[in-house]
Image (cartoon, rainbow, N blue to C red; front, side):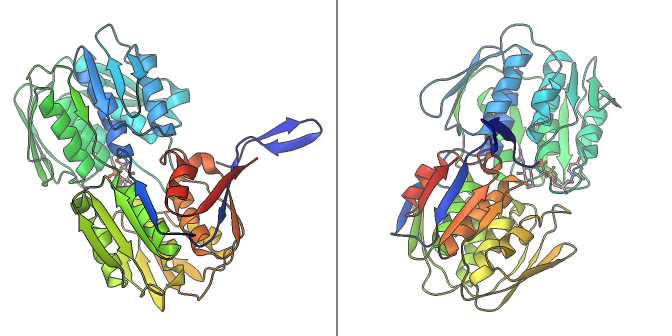
Length: 432
Ligand code: UD1
């Protein structure tokens, strides 16, 4: 997706603002981390599993969450964002089973309505979703899971149509520990008779967050966070108040961005164990780390040592931090190798990073980064969310000014961007 343009007088100008970053930090930074995007886009659909008003706390104010909220409204729920970070969802009345295409095409997480709608209404019509362009992202495991629970599922004219008179607990083996498929099956299985067991389930913290939310509602999900999850279906679920976990990807992004700019950086309101894969790699790169309860401080003197990194399902290194880590390693003292094992086409950032003076090449699913002594600011464009985050990291590492277009992609997942960059000690601003 490129930038949108509009006519202004006789001129054609970009609709969205650009982000300008002056490279290198001006002081040590301290950033407070928001609630997890990937939890929020799963827990919002899960509120439909209960009658009454659910209250979610620590919900980030980002575009992906706004789209998920709009989808719930279109389905018939009343959704209000009250004070900072609190979203109330009242879903007692009649609901539609049809997710509207104009919203679904903007958010891959819209597919997470499938499980809750089938559980609650016995049917769902959900468009094949949009989202980041990082390779083909099949949904076969979502569909297989629902079918094994007893739903009839067809793809018709770009829509997933699912129907089930009743759902029956069963054993489901996922060929890959897909986050979304694990979540959809978990939500649908709350309405199934008997016990459902998911083997090779995703272990991501956001999957555990969803299980904890369902359990707080009165459900019974056992084993989330391991590769075998059991769901006892049929427990009546009631609306509750629940606080979402901190965003480990946002935390990792600001750690890498802060380190790229020199000096030290502290991220607050994090769960350090969720960041272990990143922290281990940072230590290998020569970063000094200190964690104190829910805060992590990182400091790097000089350039990072080169790394060999492979992205893997949790607790492996997260693919959602791969572009940012690649940007951080542009200044490393030697050659780093990054192997992307989750998505087939997640190196869109590589060519943009070259504009800042980065020396890196890809070969299939591997990127080889030859560290350079300095980067210099330039004009770059983000075409997906984490690529945008990588451009911010590189812009902070570079000398001079970097202008980033396509910021709307970044705003899908990062709230209060310029405020947080300022907290990080970076000079950043918007321009038209
Ligand atoms: C979630 C996260 C996303 C993250 C990704 C991997 C949300 C809203 N998004 O996405 O930020 O990058 O996990 O950590 O939580 N696959 C199949 N068949 C399926 C489903 C997935 O083959 O039915 C494959 C995908 O093509 C991909 C891999 O499994 O190669 C991982 O996908 P998955 O874990 O499902 O990612 P998402 O849930 O879409």
